[in-house]
Image 1 (tube, rainbow, N blue to C red):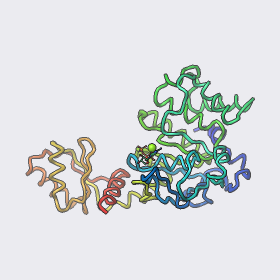
Image 2 (image 1 turned 30 degrees about the vertical axis):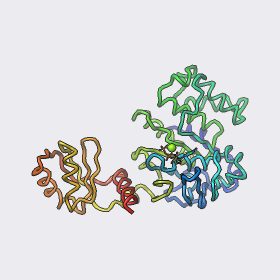
Image 3 (image 1 turned 90 degrees about the vertical axis):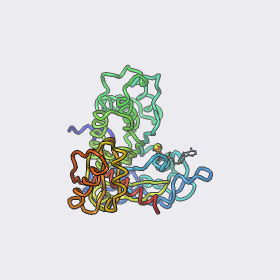
Image 4 (image 1 turned 60 degrees about the horizontal axis):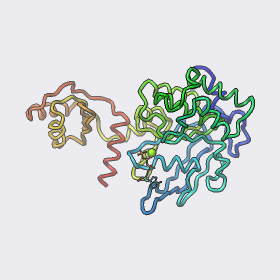
Length: 343
Ligand SMILES: Nc1ncnc2c1ncn2[C@@H]1O[C@H](COP(=O)(O)OP(=O)(O)OP(=O)(O)O)[C@@H](O)[C@H]1O
Ligand SMILES: [Mg+2]
């Protein structure tokens, strides 16, 4: 890993006291509340007519933290990020980002935060270089600084070979990296990224997260929404949104520890009959299906495995690879959402 990110994304180390609530720059040591929050929401709500998209969110995010937002479609992730980015007004409650109030000081927030929207935010007919210049114009980055910044960002995002290519003709992964580069043009120290890797192939996703890791190490505060649980695992803390409410929030290990029970994994044929049979067993807390894999949450994996096998086989289901596994974020989240739905 090189130190490009120190040059690229983050201005807090240089600007220090220019941010009203600036804390120590650089990497935050572990815990989520080591330094004063750089993002604070207080009973933040947003409705669209009668639809409550976000309900009374009170959340502090520390300087240097990488915070993941997860939740099903329509949970309120985009609404939250748009409110933090001061591109949408709350219905009630308030948000402070880098010490500025999103309602009264939106311009200051735009200067300190970089917002990458969920939808395509580039100009498809403009080249990579033209897009970067366009964003530099918007953020008033000019002269030699612009030249240096663009050269650094192209190197950082591995986009030098494609400078002349139109954005619309880049691969999905490259488009996301260009969008991130445009978001970083004014060196924001808070990054608000809405599903930046959705639909991107696994290799490009990994590369994208390598970039985020560099920015994190350079002291950036990152709020990122994602549908991918492996990405959620990489965050310092994760918040689970469901129907506009933050239903859980904590470090990935703490979220996984919320799963009540242990997980048994198996392959079964036919899957639908296996699911029915397993769901009927009194010792089964829940069944989750991932393609031809089944994850079965039980109170005691070793004790229950022989019982599950015999129940399945006596219903004519072929069982393969039955084993106890460690719970992942995925099982924990599905379980937490199901518990919430059952309330
Ligand atoms: N501009 C809008 N006008 C009306 N309703 C909206 C608007 N934006 C969001 N909503 C509604 O608010 C709720 C939350 O939407 P939001 O886009 O924040 O969810 P999300 O978690 O980002 O979903 P996804 O995973 O699909 O991106 C949904 O019910 C959505 O239909
Ligand atoms: Mg969204």
